[in-house]
Length: 407
Image 1 (cartoon, one colour):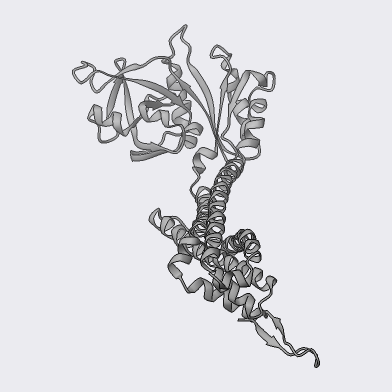
Image 2: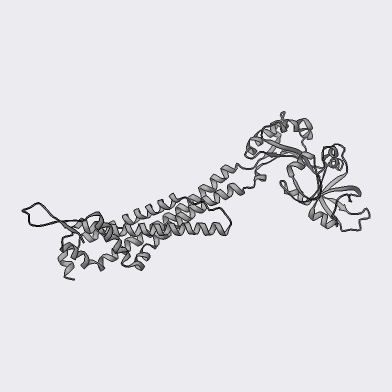
C-alpha cells in the first residue's frame, strides 16, 4: 500500500508517495500470489529466452566443434589436373615438381596417373580364381606420402623402387581379401604379368578413390599405358594447415609457367570462411526463432494483464479511494508485467543453459556457454514485459474509484 508522508504544516493532509521499495514489493507479491497463472502468462518469454540461449549456446558449441573436428586432411589437399587429358604430360616432369615443392606452404607433392579402363587382376596365371577387374593408379613416392595409406601389413615403396620401375603393388584391404591375400611378398597377376605385393592398406588420408584401385609406382604404370588411350594425370599436394588457398593460387604457375591456364587447380574452401558462414546461418536462425517466441510472450503477457484488469477493478478502485494516484496504479501494473518478463527471462535462460549442456554432453561435445547471452535474454524479456504492460496500464487509468467500488 502507498505510504503517507507528512506535508508542510497547515494543509492538514498527507501526500501519498509510492516508494521504490513499495513498487518492488507490490510487483513481486502480485506475481507470486498466483504462481501457476504467472507461469502460464510468462510461458512465451520463458520459451523465447530458452530458445535464444540454447540456440546461441549450441551455435558456439558447434562452431567450436567444427574448429576442432574439421577434416584437416581434406583441408590441406590440393589437386592439379590438365584441362584436357590430351595435354602434353611434360607439366608433370621432375623440374616442374621441384618448382612446386619450393612454393611456401607445400608439405609434399607427387605425380599420379589413372589408367584408362579396368584391368583383370588374378592370383595365378591360370585365372582359376574369381574374375576381378579394378582400376590401376600409378603414383610416385611423393604422391604416396600425400595419400598416406594406413597400412595393415607391409610398407610403402621408395624413390629407388620408383626410379627402377619395379613391379610392385599396394592393395586396398577389400581387394586383397577378394584375392585371398593376407601378407606381403606374394604375387598377383595383372593381365598375366606378375607383380609383388609389398603393402596392404585399409584407409587413406587423401584421395579415397584409391581404396578401389591397385596402386603401383608411376614409372611401372607408364609401361601399362596403351597407345591411343586417354589416361587421367594429376598432381596431388599436401599443404600446411591454412595454406591450401595460397598454394592453389600458385600451383599451376609453378608446374606449367608457359601455360598455367591449361591446368585446373582444385583447392578446398577456406575453413575460416566456412565457419563464418555456419556461424551466420545458425545465428540468423536462432534470432528469428527467439524473436518469434518473444513476440508471442509479449502478447501473452499483455493479454493476461488486460484480462486481469476486469478481475481487479475493485482492487484498483480501492487503491485509488485510499489515496493512490493514477501514476501509482500505472507504475504498479507496469511493475507486474516487467517482473513477469524478467522472471520468465531468467527461467528461460536457465532452461536454455541446461538444454545446451544436455545436448552437448549427449553428443560428447565441449559445451560453450556465454553468461552474457543469458543476461541479454533476461534483459530483453524484461523489456518485453515492460512494453507489454503499457496498454493494460493505460486502460487501468480510466477506472473511476466510485464506479469500481459500486461493483
